[in-house]
Length: 387
Image (cartoon, rainbow, N blue to C red; front, top):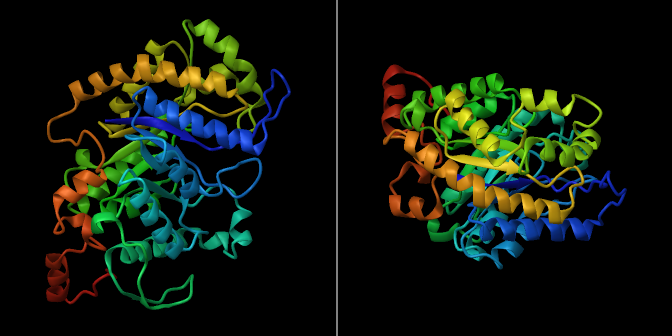
């Protein structure tokens, strides 16, 4: 199982000192946190993508390439790649280039984002968010899997004889996750392509998370990628750790109470009851995280949000140290001890996708539409879906 961190890159004042870091300091802090993740044995660092204050991660591939140059093992990912407001051609080129720089240590998570004004800034209509996500991602798959693309759609100018460069490393596109909190269409999209589904459930109760993951699993099986419990699932989480629960709450409460997202709303106690946020001891985080699998089934990736709400970088580095040294080793053992043999232990990586060979479903534009499916459609007189 993969464990790691994701960062939204917020620039927030420390409520205990009143000091707000500069954008440069925040970018440097994210880099230090990623390097610490590798140092303590975590598997993944993922950055968000935002194009508005008070966030800094407007250029994820630039930052991930910088981190790649300073790491050897860490898998570099995104917590959101904006498939709606970013041109699929740009995504295809940028992440293939990053693949080469990082020697394959790359995957990415598609998302629509949660900032409405971004759409008109990039000349898009938020009311078309779902159709754009579906059309743009299908084009992205073609750009990575076909050497020459002729294409025409609703949301960008046509492509005639276009070749995206560089080609994916080893002619193997990165593995893709689809992130969504409440859009069933995105869970369906992930299932259709046999991609991963990441439910970043940090603000949601486990019942809602289980419903969304369950839908994705059922549709994954429907499209004949494997059994429902073999679907590739990732979850989000939040934690603040200390030797005792009382100490953790004392230290974290000022940050929680003033956080831009949930500050001045639910109490810390209420929020920890209804979401994955755990403020307490390593043992409490272990128990809470293992309990997620009781609700959603055995899953493959767990990412924690640790740097937010104005927490000083030194505090975050301390938290990552505890997470990597005291929490994750136990979680690895416990998750693997309970996992059935037929359920994947980890998501696909560049190495595993290359090893699977060129005939593997990953290399198909639309693996749910196999040749046999199309033949059955023709025989039944049905119109085949676009592939």
